View 1: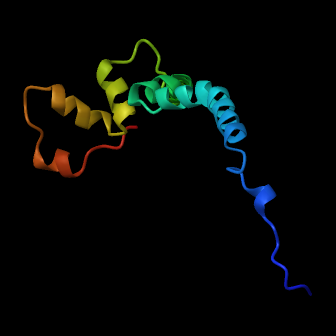
View 2: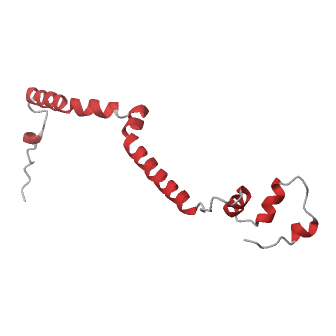
View 3: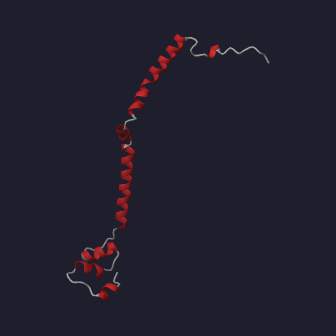
Length: 119
C-alpha cells in the first residue's frame, strides 16, 4: 500500500471549463423538445385530452354490457297481454297487486295480506 495520494483531477468535469460548457449546451439542446413536451403534459387539460380514448373505450364497453344485460333480463311477453301484466312481470309482484295500483277503489284487508298467487 502506498501513501501517495491518488490524483482524481482527470475525473473532474470542470477541469476544462470550455469543454464542460459545450457539453452542457449540447445536452440542453438535445433535451429541449422533450422538456417542452413534458411541460405541456403537466396541464390538466392536456391530461384530460390524453385520456379521451381510454375513457370512450371504457364507456362503450359499459354501454354494451348494460345493453346486453337489459336485453337478456327484460321479459318478453305476448302482445295480447295487458300492460299491468307486463308491469307485474317486470316488478316481480302478483298481477292482482298491480291491478290495485291502477284501480279507483282500495283493496280489502284480506286482499292485501293474502293476495292470490297467479304468477
